[in-house]
Length: 67
Image: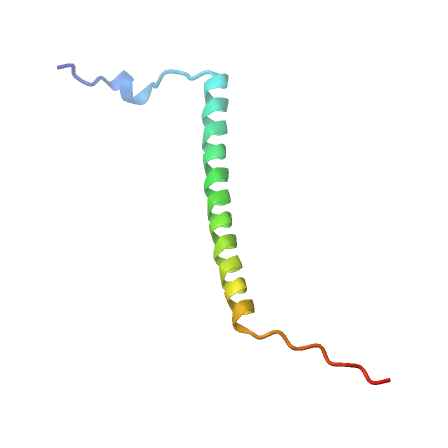
């Protein structure tokens, strides 16, 4: 069992710019994917409600025009 040293907590190892960029990129892609999934779910829900409403209302018959 190793003991924790002060250097491990207060002087973390430097990360490279590429590693920071990769982490930022992956987090951003995850956020965008979550937002896209939520938007698609909402769109499907609203589409289903609109189709149900359109099916419930009868379409008016076209009236004949008089000459």
